[in-house]
Image 1 (spheres, one colour):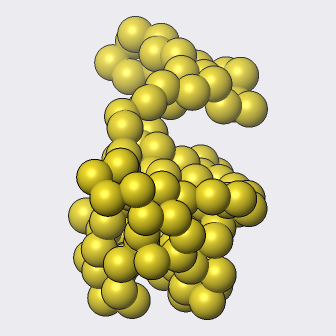
Image 2: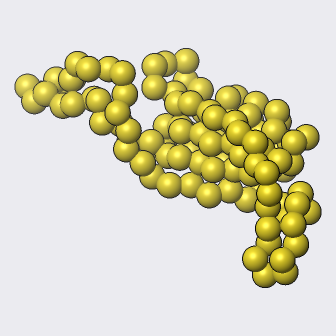
Length: 112
């Protein structure tokens, strides 16, 4: 099993969610988060300088069977990108165990 964590633009969330559903990923968790970006300069709008180092993003946490990992990552890349700085990041890690609390089931069947 793989855990896929993605930090994306909030404006791209609907596109990513639809893309994930299209490849068969129907369950995941998400949070609204704020992060610090690499850009150190602020932007000026109507004479007021705004900090752009604090960035509003959406954090997705998805656990899938190994055979769904590539499709999941590709769905996120294909729907979250704008070809601009700040599109986000994807992290993939190994999951050792999954347990369904209600039944005590263990393993990949808990993801179905």
